[in-house]
Length: 260
Image (cartoon, rainbow, N blue to C red):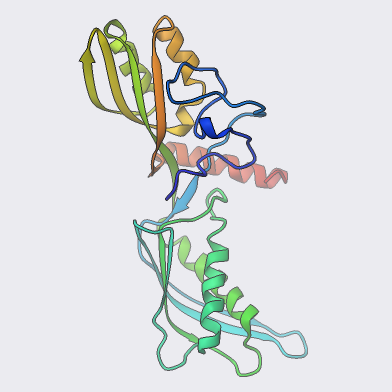
C-alpha cells in the first residue's frame, strides 16, 4: 500500500511536505505547506482479518425483463496487494462475459468500507459458483450481485481499520533524551534504534501519522528549540480497539447528521 495518499486529497499540501503539518518546523527534509486550510485529516483504510464465504443472489423484476445474477465464493486477506480477483468458475455457472462484471462490482464495493467509509485494501476475492438467467442476466445484474456478495462476506471477515504509520527520526542534545522518549510514548509510538554521538541523541521510532500533527511545536518546547525531526511513510497498521471505536462512532454520527 502506497503512502502517496495518507492525507485526504481535499487538503492542499506541497510536494516538499507530503506527510507533514503546517507548523514551520526545523525538520531537515521537510518544508511547511503554503495555502493549507482546515485541520489535517488522515486517510484511513479498511481491511479484513479472516476468510469469509459469500453467496448472494440479486433478483429484480419490473414488469418486463428483470435482473438476475448469483455470485458465490470467498474473500481472504492478502499482504502484498490491495486487491486480487480470482475466477474459479467451472461449468459455465457464470458465463465468461459476466466474469468482468463481477470483478467490477467487487472493486466498486471496496471503494467504501462499512466501518468508517474508508477504501478497503488487502483483499483477495475468489468466485467459484453462481447462476444466471438467459433473459434477465446482464452486466449490471452481475455487478450488483457482486456488490451484495462483498457486503455479505465483509462483516464476517473480521474487518479492521488501518492507519498510516510513519518512520520518525528525532535528534536533540543528550540532555533531552528522556523528553523525546516521553513524547514518542505519548503518541502510541514504538521506539527503535537510538544512537548517541557528539552529545547528540538520535531516536528512530514508528508513530501513527494521526499523532504527529503539531509535533514540531511540542518538540521545540520540550528541547528548548534544539530538537529536529524527520518523518516518512512506512506502512499501514491496525488501529487499537479504542481508537477504532472512536472513529466508528464519529463516522456514524456524521452519517446521521448528513455530513458524510
